[in-house]
Image 1: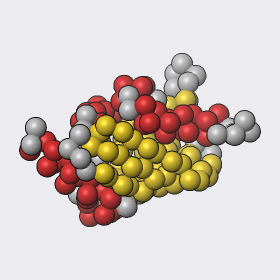
Image 2: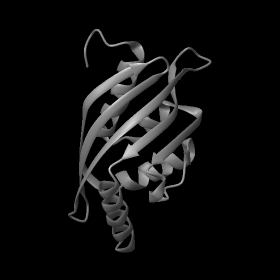
Image 3: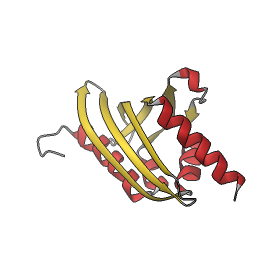
Length: 144
């Protein structure tokens, strides 16, 4: 993070950093009450998620992680949007390492109280990494 980053870039970078802390409640606070998460490619059949659904899905996944690394490689800013390219690696409680790469478009709004919030995330994921993650989490839940 650079001191010359705009408030919305700093906000999104802090949100990405929040994943390293693996605290889904802190991450959810950055989301607008009408938040939506849309995952591409659509062929993965991952349903769009509301704030509550995203929180539940992310909390479940984090429950199986023992360690998470997330590195933002590049950031592009446009009015009301921050586009980030990142990669991540997670160690699971059942011994599987998950690797993932994605590009996210975070749509930023100013909330009623003047704070920045993420209204929508469009996530363009690495299909193999996403499928590996889904399969590993399903296997982990089956063995729980």
